[in-house]
Amino acid sequence: MSARIPVHLTANFERNLQDIERFLTDADAAYAFDQLLDDLLGTVLPNLERFPNMGRSFMARRIGSVEVSQAIEGLRSKLGDGELREYLLPDYLLLYAHLGEVVYLLSIRHHRQLSFDFAQLWNTGHH
Image 1 (cartoon, rainbow, N blue to C red):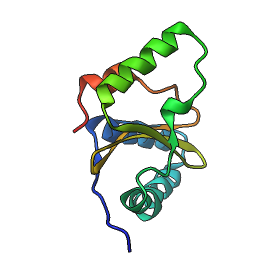
Image 2 (image 1 turned 135 degrees about the vertical axis):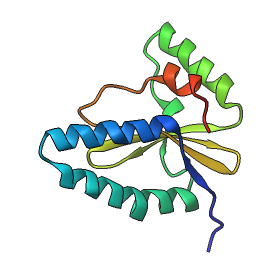
Image 3 (image 1 turned 90 degrees about the vertical axis):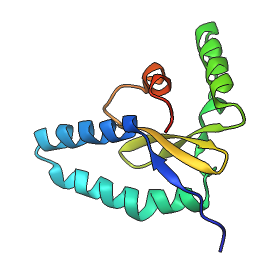
Image 4 (image 1 turned 180 degrees about the horizontal axis):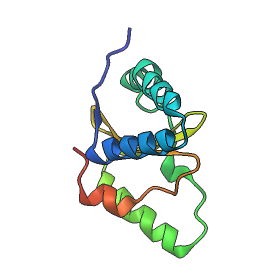
């Protein structure tokens, strides 16, 4: 059996979960939030503990502008030797950082929500 590494939830990730819960409750779909929690606890966290690089590399995306190129370079400098990766679920996209021997869950979004707010992610740190 391979060694497991710790997976930490950031404050931003926890806020995202609260936003998703409100969204689903308002849509009379609170059961979907329970299913998300079951998926996170039963599948996503155990997978990332064993296979932290399983998600798609966020940095491997095609760069379509100078602005995006500059933003990616800024992210690379903040990550150092770490990696920024995406974990896809049927209705959600999870963004996480693999830094050293720890995985930090940075953000989770329902497919109907807006893109990730990188400025907010890095202003609050990754602990």
